Image (cartoon, rainbow, N blue to C red; front, top):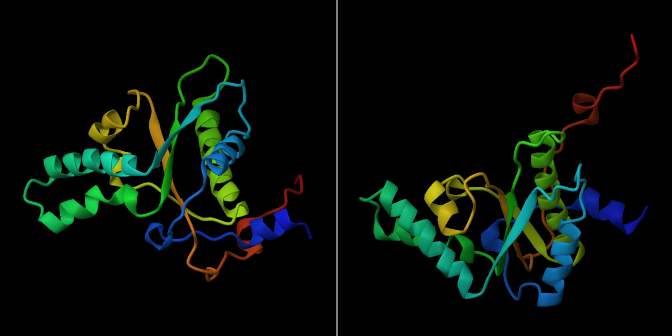
Length: 190
């Protein structure tokens, strides 16, 4: 069995708060983004892009998140607002995968959205292959227009996920997976 197959069979997500520093180097980030961009892309539309949050930029993005949170929940307690402010500081590196799917004369939007999802999964796999842990998550702020505007997304763009990357705390526990006979069938032509 190849190392790649073993990685794919054993990959697990970690909670973002479990991921510690140091995070990937600049060269490793370039590798992560290169691998993330090598996905099926019908029509060569590049229907995704990436936003890298590292260092102090994570806190600056948190200011946009907490501002949107406070506008929705003006009576929120200070500790609740602080938890929102630190959303992107839970791990040393966060990379947002932005879906740029749009109507096209030949390429269905659904295929473009799937390509963005594939980019996010390649990013997770590349992080694991480099020895990091990763967590692909979307939380309320991934769908909040004020946050998206503050992060520089165009009106038609959406967050496919925030991928948190850092040093894993150890070997993750596996979880039960569905039996193949419950999720796979073979078409027999009848």
